[in-house]
Amino acid sequence: MNGFEARNRDPERKVSLIYKRIILHKAHYLMLFPGLLYYFIFKYVPMGGAIIAFKDFNISGGIWHSPWADPWFKHFKYFYDSPYFTQIMVNTMLISVYKLFWIVPPAIILAILLSEIRWKAFRNVIQSIMYMPHFISWVIIFGISLALFSEADGLINMILKNSGLKTIPFLTSNEWIRSLIVGTDIWQNLGWGTIVYLAAIAGIDSTLYEAARVDGAGRIRMIWHITLPGIRNVIILMLILRLGTILDAGFEQIYVMYNIQVYEKVDIIDTWVFRTGLEQFNFSLGAAVGLYKSIIALILVLGANTLAKRVGGSIW
Image 1 (tube, rainbow, N blue to C red):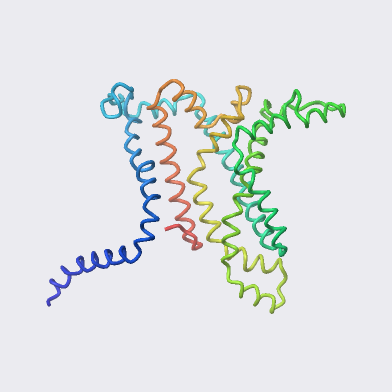
Image 2: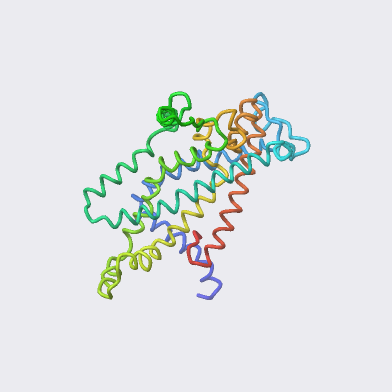
């Protein structure tokens, strides 16, 4: 057989190997299929709808028969020219960075502390208590916040009032609202965020710790030289993934908790689009801003992944 014939047979051999591999692992692929189908239907198929960002969408015409915007960047320009553009971009970035800073490092520290607890029953109780807020909706959390921070009859202000001190408008003050939003987000998600880091710590080879003990290393040195390097790639991975959603800032939370008195400090891209776009049936504007956010997120993720390659923690 000459070289030309051998090259022609290679693709057939590869297809045969792929087919055999699928048959061998058919149970795994069957389990994977529902997830792939979900992402295809609800994540990839809707991408075609992004075309309305370049059209003057109307319900009667639908996506394909609505007229094209003139000029094609009309809705993007409307967003950029909005007098609130700078304000909502700053608010979105600040709130996202605050959440990133106050959740990721504390989650790592908390995971390390939990992994150091040797009494397993006590550790499980602590973990369960910390995880529970994650399953509480933002509507209920806002109700709890009202009960605690309301200026009229909130528990904290009642204590301040009975102590002869001035009450604080936590929910309607530009000075306090960001702290309240970040604080409630920490309370809901900090415990849940430790799961990934705990799993990473559990995957570290225990013989490394045994060798360190033999060499006389204490707990702090083992954490610094074994635990943190052992979960470094996971930390980088989680940071890269968080960067992909940095322009979200938590629409559900902010939409429930904000009011007209604090728009200046907590009005973000999503809440502005909801009021200006969706409530006024300007779906093209909403699609344009969504596409804008996706492009920025893609640039951030690619840039972060490129930087991460230098320390060996890239995703691809």
